[in-house]
Image (cartoon, rainbow, N blue to C red; front, side):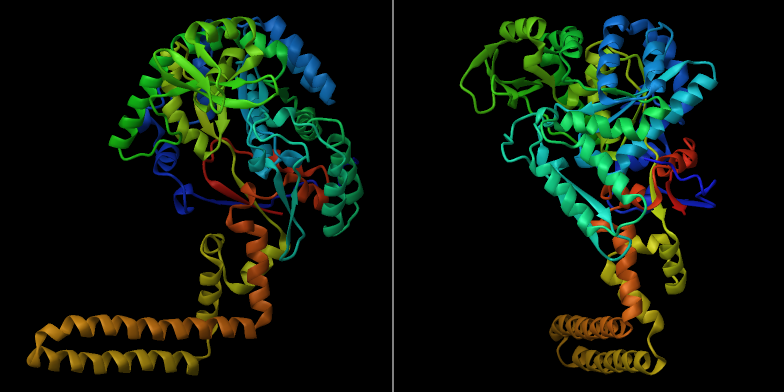
Length: 556
């Protein structure tokens, strides 16, 4: 795809708001951003800013025992097959050297690359690797493709903005998909072409559309797998920056992970006890754990002969069973499997990061808010297995504000923070600010009159029978509620009467809070590449500031 060089600088204006101002953020995550050192109990190697992670490089390198030659041979073969360019291959060769560390991030294999935060994660890791290298600690960026996860429903849908009030969704589930199959190994069938064609039939066509459709068609093709398609998509987006892609389903990497699998099996009871205790500690400090860990929990999943992935659970007396299966395993059985047939196992969410950082000399990890929160739990797994705890940082977080959206906000007198409220409330608020004085006066006068008369009744009842006051108070609340309800309906009617304002508010929510979520959690990166071309990733990369922990608004 040809790159558009017509614009040298895309973001003349950058602003931001703290995550504490954004609804539905966990207390633990907000505290981690505002005062991370206060949580050292849960994050033993916590530091304020990503570049400070360099101080942990000596510890990481000393503890790292994985054969770099075998690792990098496997990574080179995988990345070359995904179509990366020379910079990634150079970074793989650099990783062979004993003083080089890795900056890691990762994400599930989402349709067409998944939501925007996937690319934000990747570019965050790339930027820190470059900054560490410039500061004297050589580092390479690595993306862990979470292909072992088996919840396809969670990643089977993605969304594109049309540039108007409509958001177009694309959903793809192969007809022969088996629910327990690791997503990365699911084979793509011919119906993917129809999914892509239907998507682009609903998107406004422009000079980049045919190229974007071709890119997706080449990666997401009949006979390939979702893991490979996701990898090829990331390679197209990021390989020029040198991002190394890692697929944990690769047999060579499974064999490299066998020792940490074995240790996790051997010390599974200690791991579970530590996780349960950590859950209690978090609850006592007023925080919520992200992953429920019961006493029958086991840190590894089982892969059966049909390709299914199911949770292992302890049933008592040292016996373990995969969910829904009759076959029983002893600890010794699982130890043998871990050593000889590691393909039959994969880590659960509490062990995955430890396996990742056993395979890689990880000096820092970039995650989302939920990952940061559950890292407060799984850090005890590192400690139980004698591994250095990896510092975790929040990925860069953006909303892209296009010219029409900024113009509409200014016309309506709205700020970005206003759009974090319910759309109806924003519409009502705008209508209230623009209601004619006569109508507004009618409602104000009615409320004042009702309250005045009810106060007179209140005084009289106090003299006659004070027990009636409670009943009057209840009826007062109902009256005020009904006046408020009719006022709200009137305001909505006024907004509809001014169709332009209602439409603009609807368009703003579609662009900035699609499906009721931050743009980065819903829209696909190709939604913007389809309108602005492949330089979009360059523009995002240029906007990264690893010292800025806010959610940032980038004006195009």
